[in-house]
Length: 611
Image (cartoon, rainbow, N blue to C red):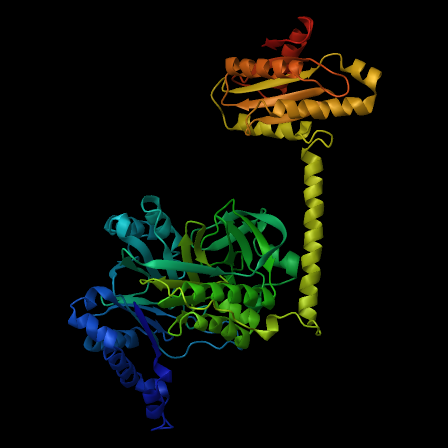
């Protein structure tokens, strides 16, 4: 395949034309300039060959990225494309304007023509002004080709409230192998969403356009660059809406997150103050960032997609070095993949955070992989693979595509960036503060983990403690299991006092550790095993009726009695078994298990009794 990328404002013909009149802004010549660029694409030998072979309508896809959110102008653009490149299919989206006064953004129309040699592309357009994203996803799933030819889907959407995740989930429910890659269209003013998408079927204010790529040979390399890391404790979303409004976090107004942790008040600088600290969510194996776009007077925050109730989020932070290093490493991997076409979509928030020079440098790393790449910024990035993903923020995505085999003799790509080599130099104050926060967070996390372990585990045996077992049993009972499919074993060591008296307490502790190891060998990984106190133990068996639990108890009892324990030799245990009954509470089932254990003791020890 082949990719040709041109930018209208940077064509030599355009620059010459712009000099003809200093009093007229260059954009007023756009139709003339755009036509010249389209003619340049039409004259490309690969496009001419596709036309001559009669495959241009299926194998040529023109991607257009337009910074002006003007329907009348976009209509003119589409008419020009129809005139000059009538065979090509078209996907157009508007791009993101400035998020801060210092931002450099795309100011000219960019075109990237993909010409497939061995693959085909089918375009689907959905006007979601009268249907939901989920309904559109159902329609698209029914239209997809057989899975053996389905390799990937390029996706663009317009209207920030039309999150792509509902669409993607519906498609993946019946076609889990599909790879989605794309962009949510952007707008000139972040507070005034005028985003648009378009194809030859029309312009959509609230739409989804998908290009289904059909191929038996296409290889893809999706790359996800983030660089932000979790900071502080996890918080839980307790109030949100489908339109992207986040109302409550930990039962408090959502805005309190940034007020409490960053001292940020809701004002005209809200985005500037919070964009460097997006919320971080774990989606599959991928950490996903969410940037707050705005706020409401009621204390809610506006995001480009819904953050469902129950989602755990963390504030996050980054260093420019983290972002650049990750992108450089991934760009080297992409270059080694040897893509024939390369699509990039980058969150404008990275440019706000890093500054224009470093954001451009990050993008330029990928020029080592494919000179004809294009890069676009919108409200959100779209990547969904088997590892997770969906709608993303604060990321730089790259999708390499290749129809032909790699050149085995090509040297591996290594990118040199002097700023990423560790030299003795003055460390910026901001980096020193971030390093301090990072180290403090790690220390705090380690302390919290230690406290959690003390609160849940018995320090002597490593088993769950009494408190944790009570929690587990309460949880299992709350699931309203069928009667008798949850069983509890309570057991203790017979005449354990004699062990302590004859061999000492240290020997007694060692016996408890050895016994715990013996029992673990007899149970399933999902069974909950706890030290109840002293020499008493509890074992909770899920999906086990009392007869099955009795058999497990007997297997444990026999294994223990046949094992030699240092230093005292053989020991025995007595076991009480019971199963959950209707109306049981943790207390009632514990009491019944204890009574069953007492029955076993009364029978002469080293036996099992049921109640």
